[in-house]
Image (cartoon, rainbow, N blue to C red):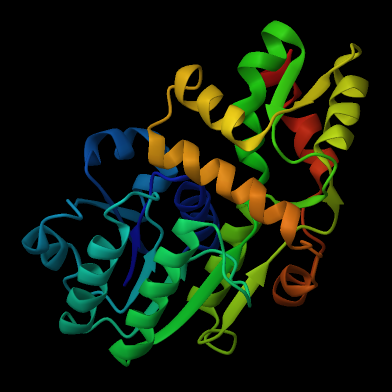
Length: 288
């Protein structure tokens, strides 16, 4: 039995769809199981077992892992991430789970200003020490996260950041989910660390240009100093300080380290990754 922890998340929900298409039985975990049952629809309910879990309650986690052989672990970033995922890995080992697929973050050779990346490195260390077979997926930024720019694009035809003209890499979360499905169902490719990228790199001004063409009106990217962006995210984006700081840290790292595409997705899936142009075309109505 494959257990999905993070079944309602950006990657987890896409993974459920992929596993249902493949006809793979799965147990999807959620704090709101009834809501999840409604989301997966009739086809999903025929093959997905939905169960309650509270990641902060070891008894709940242990119950959810009954008779499981594999665990997909993708939790939303939070200040408790190391504590919660470390506990989950320990319970997985005690419950007889043999293989964990963890969503992590890109690793860097030199010191990283991204605190969350450090959290993931600590959790990866716990995985290595657990003795469990594990596959680590390290994706770059999700294309889906570009939707957070929609409010200012729709009302002001602008979006903000502190990237300057530095190019960055985006990957469609559905490609990450497809890779996760592959390593969960094909053990010949499991047990490795994979850095996942899209096929191209783009600067924010280039993204603004593409949106301008799609929307048939000028869209502008406004570059802010990091501290100004931090204030903007807290005061106008209503983000908690730690999360706003995370966004700024990611953009700082993107300016420091090239985010070159690789061929990992193509090698695992036998096809090219989804393109940014295709994604923007698909969700263009979000930005009208």
